[in-house]
Image (cartoon, rainbow over all chains, first blue to last red; front, side, top):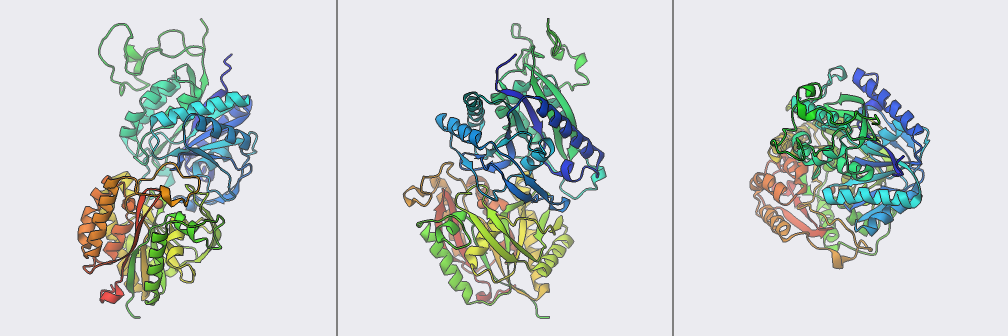
Length: 326
Length: 299
Ligand SMILES: [Fe+2]
């Protein structure tokens, strides 16, 4: 049994539709049920808190950490305001927020805690907490995403979180709030007609899902710059979520991945994904390696898709299957 | 009905630091001083606007960011607390404002007819963005004029600054036509900084002016270039340069606010009045007025 303080990791999408309009589109409804499965998972996890990194909370002065013990507000999304208001009353682990902040400071990061009545918690964090932790079963801590931060800063941020957890003796589930492809439709759509914005976004999303389903978190982290270039609208300098997640969970591929749901939400690739530590990696190779011993050329990481991978030796599982002991 | 007109257009940036340093009763934090050259610039703007009669202010704010279409505030009044998500230590402002909903609706209709994707914002629990609040407060702290706030459609991020320009030129024309049809006298506010690279750390005393300067000399050169064109009445050239300026100076003109306003003013050829320039946490900010009515160019 691992003594790592992170007992599970999740990627959760932050658009408000599964919370406010689940009945308007079958996929949005399925995502809501996927969130509910994660809710159960988190309850069973033995975690003491939910540690969130929200790509929908941009910051400029380093990273900000939500430390208000009981934030209360009625939130309205700036884009999808017609879906309605979201009243919330959350519980934050302010002590841990302070510890996290100190650990960041000791590692040279500019961070600060924020605890102000009426602070605008971002739509993504609000939606994910409402759906996975509606009764405040666990306290949470939310961390912003600095618009200027790149890989180094984001990785150190993740390491600081682990250090703070170890010092506190607490266990946590790590949650990234964000989508895969993030391109929204550019016109108003009939909810029933929702689809992933483009075929290219769809292919990239499927590729990422295939990796994560095989537990290859570090491989996805290594692909982040390419994902940013190919499947992300450039609102910030890079696609950082998986750098942070791999830094907090452990930078390797020893995970068991579960895709609870993957659906278009207003054109974006919105996936509910869970990762747990596994005994064996799906594949102990770098994402573009055939074999660490014999060079047979670089692998084209864009092909094949999950369904087709049986035809490609390079992506056949080597070693025992996930969860099996040898 | 008499034809409405734009009586002035203002580049009215929204660093919350300026409100913080003024210590208005609506803002919770207290400051000793800070960013005086910019605050005196706003003071000169206010004096200048006192000479003009107008009914409403229309502001396009980079901090109401909409990735689907252009949105218009459509609720008659708002009263709430605005906490800046980036600088919550400086800006926690209790606001109470009224919206010129008929004007907003006219603008939305004109923009839609021009082929733009639009939406009226009708949710009474909506929190008005801090860019709108800061620019309006500094321009008219009495809060006695109704406002219209227009969102920033993020075409620069989704496509390119050129696509944004095409969109904002259309929105500007539609705004002008809507104002003419409304019969009202209106002041336009483009709520954006110029160069927009921030420092990512803050001094212990945020108003410690020994720490305040431009982030990078290249940003300053770009800011001065744009301001010089404003002073020379070369609005069309400014608009042509905005894509390069946006990219090279990380300028907040990515929001489209300045392009929108210059298009609504129909690219004035008279010199604009520069009331002030200064930096805020490394970004370049200018308060600039195009006194349209005084130049007989009221649209
Ligand atoms: Fe801004």
